[in-house]
Length: 218
Image (tube, rainbow, N blue to C red):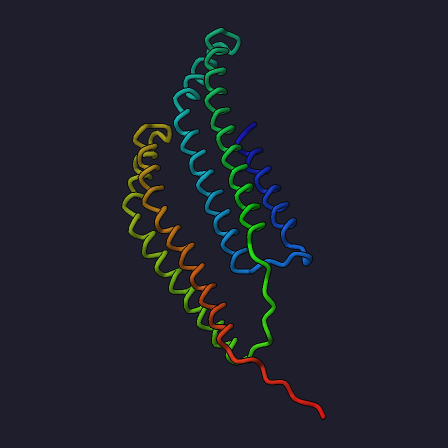
């Protein structure tokens, strides 16, 4: 199975996971659901990044197959080279398929174990508005911090462009891609944790708001 087909299956599975746990019959704690969503997104990102690296490591076999088959597509050398290239690419696809299966299995478990959503009394709207404004400021600060973190990897991004410009399948290009991936990983982790903290702070803020006053009727 090609990586593209695997990705399409992953998208379909994601839709099914979201649909299966979005019904009103079993409402779950929204913060716990958000944590599960972020964890799934990060797991999928890492799985696809690993698959791209795996495919890059097969580049020599792909190139050898193209060279062997350009002269005589029916030769034994071409058949053998294609088989080796397909085997390497197939192993990458299988590894990705297993990784995606684990991502969605963990997401389902995470959502299943989330506590039930506790109904909250109506809160003072002005206080809730201030909480939401504070969350927007929090999210903006997280975005700025993420941009600064990503900016610190700009030299590695330039090195990647330089290394891959002449030969995208070279070992230098592969190593540069790995280096950039490792530099950006903590930026993504900090962004995820920061956004999670913003959402948690919003929930705590709203809980601390006084209940909305209701007009009594005689």
